[in-house]
Image 1 (cartoon, rainbow, N blue to C red):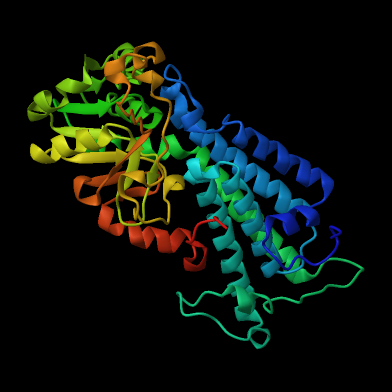
Image 2 (tube, rainbow, N blue to C red):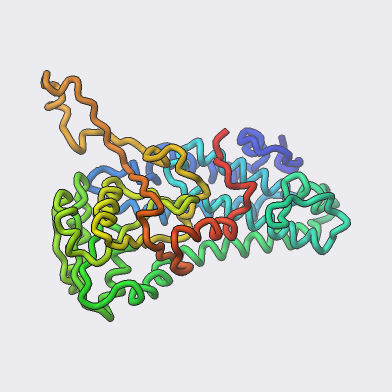
Length: 393
C-alpha cells in the first residue's frame, strides 16, 4: 500500500506498508532496541538494575518523540486513520518487548485519548456530520469517528479539520513531554507534606524518584532513613551512599532485617514499575514483603511515582501481572546447580512483585497526591475506555 493511500486497518503489517520509508526506519530502529532489551529494566544485570527507573523514563520520552515524529510527518486524513496508525504502532511495540515496559503502551493510549477528544470537539462543531456517539463519557467510538471529519481531502492541500486535529495532537504530545521533564520537580514540591521532623523512613533498593524526594524533604526536615540493600542487585548500597552524601542520617540494613526494624519505622517509601487500575501496583521484587511487614505494624506505605506509569490493567494474573523472570544465576551460580542435592530444585527469580491496593496508603505523583481508591477516576481522565485493552493480537 502506498503511503498516500487510505489507512483503514490497525494491523501492524498494514501500518508498516502505509508508513513512509523515513518514519518506518525510525520505528524499526526503536523496535530493534526493544527486542535487544536495551530499553527494558529486565535487561539490566544485577550490578546495573538500580538504574532501571531512569531507563523507564528515558524509554517513555523516546516513545513520545517517536509518536510525535510519525504523526507530524505522515499524511493521514481523519481521526480514524490516526487511531489506526497509533494502535498499529502500539501493537508493534508490544510485540517487540513493550509489554515489559507498560509506560510505552500508556503514552500511546494517552495520545489516542487526545485524538478522540479533539475529534469530539470537532464533531460538536459539526454535529450533522456525526452519526452516533458511544455512552462512555460522551466520547466518540471508533466507528463514529470514521465520519467525524471528511474521509478524503482535495489534492490541492490539507483540510482545515486535519490541520486543527494535527495541531491539537501535537500540543497534547508536547504536554506529555513537559510532564516528563517536570516530573521530579512536581513530585519534590510535595515532599515536606509527607516527610515530617524526626521521622524514621524505610525504603527498598534504589529509586531515583524516592532519592530525589528524600533529598528535597531534607532541605526542610531532619529525619533518619533505613535503606534495605536490595539483594541480589544491591541497589540500596548506592542509594544509601547518595543519601548520606546529601547529609541525611542513613542506615543500610539487610533485607532479612526488614520486619525486625519495621516496629521503629514511621513511614515506608517505595517506587512503582506500574500502577494498576484497581489501585494496586507492580514494584520490584521483595517490595510486597516490605508492604506486608508495614501492614502488620500499621505503618503507612507511600508510593512515589509518575503518572506515566498509570496502567489501565487489572491484576487478573496475581503476582504474574506485568512480571518477568530473570536468570537465577543472580542468586545461585551454575556450578552449584550440578550438585546432586540441587538437581531437583527449581529456581524462580521474579523481577517484580504485585502489591494489593489495601497495602498502599497513598500515591504521591507529579499531578498530586491520591489514594488507591481514586485511581479509577484518573484512568478516566487520562485514557479513553475503548483504549484500555491490551495491544496484544
